[in-house]
Amino acid sequence: MAKYRMALIGFGGMAGWHTENVRQKIKDIEVVGAYDIRPEALETAKERGLKAYETLEELLSDETIDLVTVATPNNFHKELSIAALRAGKHVLCEKPVTMNAAELEEIMAVQKETGKIFTIHQNRRWDRDFLVAKLSKEQGLLGDVYMVESKVQGSRQSLHGWRGYAVNGGGMLYDWGVHLLDQALQMFGDEKVVSVGAHLCKVFANEVDDNNKLFLRFEKGASYEIEITTNCLINSPRWHIQGTGGTLEINEWSGNGTLRRLKENAEMTWSDDIVYTAAGPTRTMAPRPEYTMEEVPLPKSTGEWSQCYENIVAVMDGREELFIKPEQALRVMKVIDLMFVADKENRSIACEI
Image 1 (tube, helix red, strand yellow):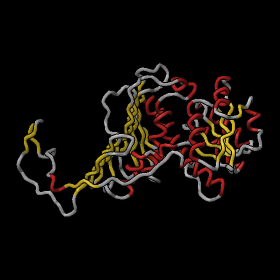
Image 2 (image 1 turned 90 degrees about the vertical axis):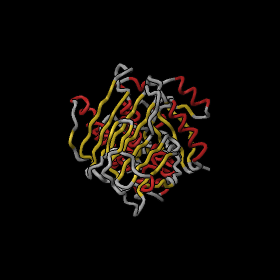
Image 3 (image 1 turned 30 degrees about the horizontal axis):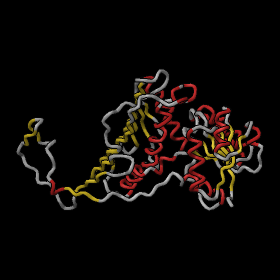
Image 4 (image 1 turned 135 degrees about the horizontal axis):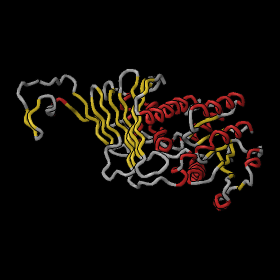
């Protein structure tokens, strides 16, 4: 028998995913019900064996519910999360947690007041490609990392449903940017972001950004570039990371790629001879001799999105600390707030985040 009972607010595509993921992988949580303002969504919930709450108040007043997952359009996250916390529920909120940092600070104040768990579904912390990149940095396989490129490139052009509307918090910065920025801050830990920039393009969408370039500089000098596109027909590698001792390229989501680093005690003998390439004569950009480099195995990663819920169960049990903390999400939202300003004013912005 499950220890905890869960209900969902909002029953669209992501809520369906949450329902099946928890049912299949999290034995200590039973998904029992859902509320949505759309009658057709409630019918879908019933078809999946869930209780369809007729009102939000009915769900929140159900004393048998321990955990609420908020999976609505982004502009409703704040009010629904606060309502659930005040009703005595633990809360998992879909990303982006709110529309801005100030809204999240309101939720955090209520969380401290109620003492309930509040966390965010930043599930891409468990993506295998990200874990390979993060572990490569943490294990020192690249030396000191000074340049990171993180790219997610789609080709369907359009944004699905409410994600195309500004009032709902649509657009790629909120949809994918929040994931990739969270990964950036996780990769560099407590190191502060000291400047941000953004180019938020509206190529096919009328109201929101659909193709983006995002820029971060960290306090020790590392440059971090994020690209999110919706009309790319020839994809770049998912990751390209340069360090003082090596280079990492990860091709796609599975985490497959190449880590090439400098050999120990294999100093290069420089020649004054100019090297002639297809691009003309050069010394600086001539290829490095193969004997000075080696390819090494990539770190093993075993991330699963279900670990988010496993951690929530452990926190409710009192066995673990919360893995995705509101304070971490607040850093991400502060960066996003500044990126909207940077794009609007066509400049980079100094900060300490």
